[in-house]
Image (cartoon, rainbow, N blue to C red):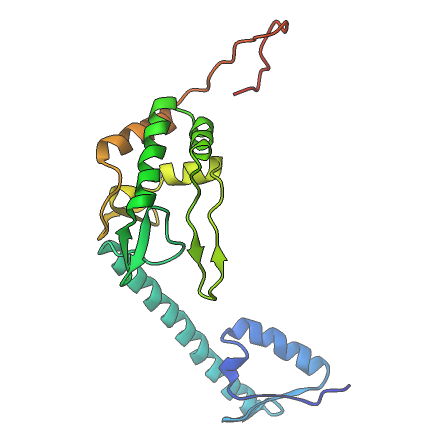
Length: 220
């Protein structure tokens, strides 16, 4: 009972979804509240106003969906051209003029990571070795200027790097692999060995080294 009318600048400032707005209108009707847009001449208090409202909302929803389709199409086209389309800058690269450039200091870490994994065939042993060598993940600065310092490596971060096609100069978009505009850090032979180990690896069978007669069933 405290509100008589909802006023907005334009109707699409409230919502661009016809379904969402119909729910809002139900609530407004329940409490006998009208809806007015300052720059658009209609009022939900009468039938003509409701008709105009639905027409304007339909166009607003269409515009939103069309814009979304255009953005997705542009994104897809850019990925097919091999362009990196943003997100967190991966360790091993820096961003310059919207293109990925190899950071040689970080690239050494990536090469050691792949080499260690091929030698040990263990993600756990790999991240432990990287931490023993004093390596950290990438330090990056957010758009707000906040510095996010590199952290110690763990299983997830190592596996993410081992399965990232970016390091062989490729772009992965929706499961499709395209040639990237950036240079590769890892050669194809190293990549293939790594993927074979990750996909065909069988769990190690732990042998008991104590008085226990059998190793724990789920170990490894």
